[in-house]
Amino acid sequence: MEPLFIQNSVLSLVLGFLIGLQREMHTIYSHKTKDFGGARTFSMIALFGYLSLWFTAFSPYFFLIASAIMGLLLIATYVINSISTSEKGSTTEVAALVTFIIGAMVNVMQPIFPVFMGIIVLFVLNLKDKIQEYEQTIAKQDLSAAILFLVMTFVILPILPDKAIDPMGLINLHRIWVMVVLVAGISFFGYIAIRLLGSKHGIGVAGLFGGLVSSTAVAMSMARRVHENGLLTKNLAIGISLASSMMLIRAGLEIWVINPALTRPFILPIVVGSLAGYGYIGLLYVTSKRENIPQNIEFKNPFSLKEALIMGLVFGVTLALISLANRYIGEAGVYAIATVSGIADVDAIILSLSSLAKNGLPSVTAHYAILIAILSNTVAKMALVFFLGTLQLFRFVFIYYLISVGAFTATALIML
Image 1: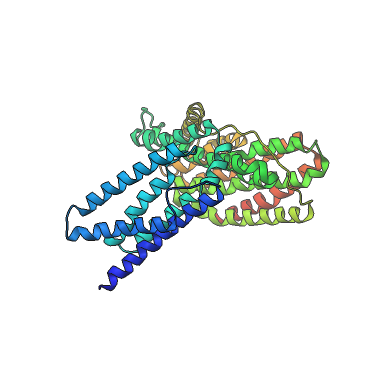
Image 2: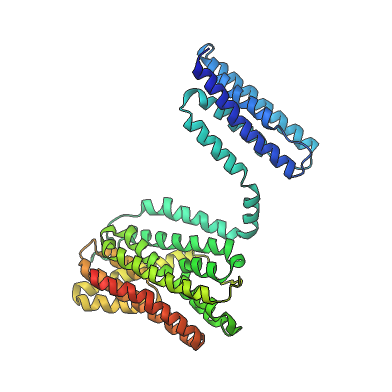
């Protein structure tokens, strides 16, 4: 007998056994009376899949016949279980069908491929409790937003022309939509993280992931909350600082996606500024009360058609203004727009500068304008904390900005 035949037979049995064991354990812990099969049944199904394809060398239609028999068996099992039990589901039957295919894969592929598929099946089967938990958290509009993101990325983006559509060469719809997808994607990740974790894990997580959505919204919300309880000042300062720490990381990511060459002088400043800021946040954490205080911040879902169109309009206007300023006024005009635009939001100006640096805008001008926009946005957030919060909260946040953004700015100026 060939060693390879023995090896593959054992491998198919083991893979089927593991999948069946997971189904068997699920039945026990779910307090079900019975299910389609367990470890032994699934072992036989995987072995049947392997042998079916192996016998094809002697009978060309054997695998097709075996597949049909397997399919009919699973259909019959599903019908019988649906009639005899109140709990209806087809996960085990579908898992058995996949196990049959995995067994067949052992015959024609290197072992790594069926093993990989077996692990993926085990992982997915084991996700049920988590999926049910997330189903209670994720709202219908969040699913709609995720679908819209896919449409924006894989349907709309590819059909937009990657060239200027106006006589002055200012408006490139493809370039603008890339920016919309990038910013909305980062924001949506933070939004979902907040939906899943924010209400359970307190101010720190709300600040960290909230910074991906909007560090300005986090600063406003937490600055107002300090009036409820002065003892939370350090905790809220940590949350605002963590949200603001994402600004440098997010800016670096956006520059890198649009114009990787423009990122190089900012890599070290971002690392230095982030590490310095996290060091101060760590000091605040060590000296604060270790309280896990829920912090629910109301964020708008970043994916709606209206929001996407508004974002695209903002990016388009920003691109046009910077192009015109650079063309007719020079560096001073670009820096002025960066200052004003940065007060409200850094995404539009950073992405616009990164894009235009590939199309005529001097890299040095883009670097300094990005630095100005980040400083402008930092001053705006400090003003929010000063006017909406307390003097003590402002001191903590001001020291964070002085250390983090100060280190970033000093290092950037040296690099530039």
